[in-house]
Each structure stands twice: as structure tokens, then as C-alpha cells.
Image 1 (cartoon, helix red, strand yellow):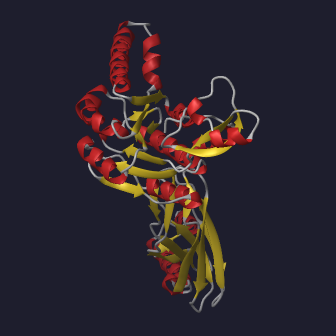
Image 2 (cartoon, one colour):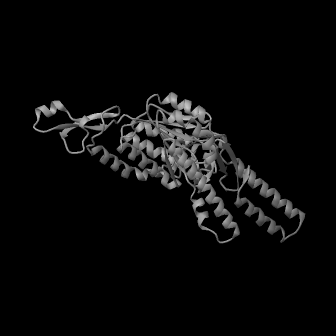
Image 3 (cartoon, helix red, strand yellow):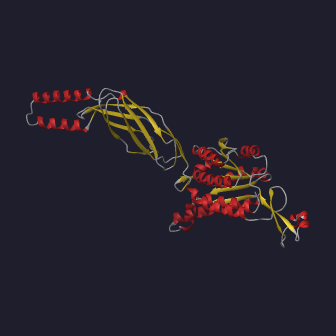
Length: 430
């Protein structure tokens, strides 16, 4: 049983009237009348258990986007249903409106739509639906909560997709050029043209030259069917917050942009989420299915408070990439974990693959370097300078080991990694 604000107002009025004639008989009279009125109003309210409900609506949205969720309500009772319904969702998915006012005749149906805006990646589950049925006077009513399951897959926001048109334009420009490359693995014949000074003499086509009046050379273009393996480190270091979000979120944005770009370039793209074991994987997908599978897989990936097992990862990469590939490691440029974990396994990776390590830099560290307003700020600046020196030192070690290093703030990591991919592709180094 529930009592509305209207009932409270009536009870308060009755209490004020008893002050006019402060007698016990008056008090008991008003009490009996009020209880009787509430009981009658409650008895005439429709039973919430006789109301059937079903769900429909969106099943997948990006972080921050609205999800429309519809409740179909059927009044199976013999009375008019007058009241409200509340569709409860977790705090990470605030809803509007919070309550819907309803009036449904017996045997009739109604429909209400709630809009949720999830703010966290991953599956978001509905809690329960609460029906409150009031009597015809609106004084008292009945309330019943029913679990009504529904799941929304909250996908990464993919803010970096705004960079995709410009990167695709560069890719088209790259593919449209006629480049003479060295003969060998990783090139495919494109066309013939006249020899110019500086061309590789190994590209001369002697049969075509014999038929023509000038020396003809073969032009070659990079193969489209390259293998790109993107590894997202979701271990302890990915949980550190850089700005307003975990480091993992910036890695996911960079992964999505690179996946979209490499997929459009015709490369075979595999994505692996890893800490000490495989947390998620996308393999053997192409076209629109590649982006859909990658987005869905990364939506449910969260940081794990464990250290990355780099030795096991190297074995997993060897199993998944049997031929020369571009291996992109999205991790933290932290000196201690990289020296202890990554550097020992680099030789077995760089000997077979082209390796790129992409890391998120913290803009607040750069701000600390410029602030020396007081003693505490000076100490922070000194600590930031020491940390930056260690980062540069380990980056130099990686570069000397044959690793391409991309170090950028969260908002710039995705386009910087895409630019490095295009540069490697243009140079024929994939």
C-alpha cells in the first residue's frame, strides 16, 4: 500500500479541524472516516499484478548517445489503471523521464518510452519496472516491482572517427601514386612506363623494351593484403587515468581508427585484447563485419589489475601471425614494465615482424614542468622532468631495438598512430 501526497494533505487538514473542537470523540471520528476513505480508494485501485508488460528498443548504442526503450503495458484487470510506471536502470545510464503517468482502461494497452544515456562501456542491464496503481480519488494505491530484463551493449564512443575522412583521403592519394619499388616479396605488378634517370635497373622489362622504341620499366605497388595485428594491453597500466578517462579508452579509440583505416586499405586486420591471457579477439573478419566485431569486443574490455605477461604474449603473437606482419602494441610507455617485460622479448618479435608501440602521454606531466610557483610545485616539476627523461630513455632503447614508437596525448594518439601506419605503407615497410 502507498499513500500519496494528496492523502497526506487531507490528513493534515483533518488534524487542523480537530483543533477547532479538541475532543477525543472528534479525533476518533475523523480517524475512522479517513481510514475508511483510504480503504475504499485502495480497494478500487487496479491490481498491478494483473498488468502485463514487455520490452522493446535499442540493444546497442555508443557511450553518451540516447537509447530509446519502450514498455508495452497491457491492463488485464477489471478496473481502470491510473498511476505511474518507473523503468529503473543503473546510475551509469540515467533516464528521462524518471516516471510516466498512465491511464489505461480495462483490457486496453499503453506504451511509454524511456530515453537512457549510458556513460560507461560494456553491457548495461535493466533493473526492474515499478508500477504504482492509484484509486479513483488518488489518495492510496498499490505498488509492485517486476524484473523485466533487457540489455544494452554500450559501445566505445569512437570520437576519433572524425579523423577518418582525412586519413582515407591520404590513403587514396597514396594508392593513386605510381611508385617504383624494389622487386621482391611484398610487391605486385602495376603497369609499364618509360625509364627515367634514377629508376632501379632491375625493374627494366627487356621484352617490353624490345617491342618499344624506348626503355620500359615495370612499376610495382605495395600489396594490399598485408596482415596487421593490433594488441591492446588491458593490464594494470591501462587502468591509470589520463585526464578524465582511463588510458585504455585512448587505446581503444586508436585501435578503432587504425582498424577502420587498415580495413579500407585492404589489409587483413586482427585485434587482440591481452593482459595475462586473451581477454577478447577478432580474427578473420573483413569489411563492415570487421568494425562491428572489433567495436563489440572492445566494448566489454576493462582494465585488469595484473601485470602483463609479455612472454606469453610473444608466443600468442607467433601463433596468430605466422608470416611477416605489422604488430601494433598499444600499451603504456612506463620504464619499469617495459624494461622488465617488453625489451627481453623484442628480439623474437622484431626479427619476424614490423613492430609499432603506441603509448598515451599524460598532458598533466607537461604542465608540471612549467609550474615553479612555490616549493611544492618545484618538487613536482623536478619529478616530472625525471619521469620524462626515463620515458625518453626507454623510447630510445625501443627505437634502437627496431621498434617504431608513437607517444602522444590521449586526443592525438589515434591520428598519430594512423599517420605512422600511412608513412610505413608509403615507404613500403609493412
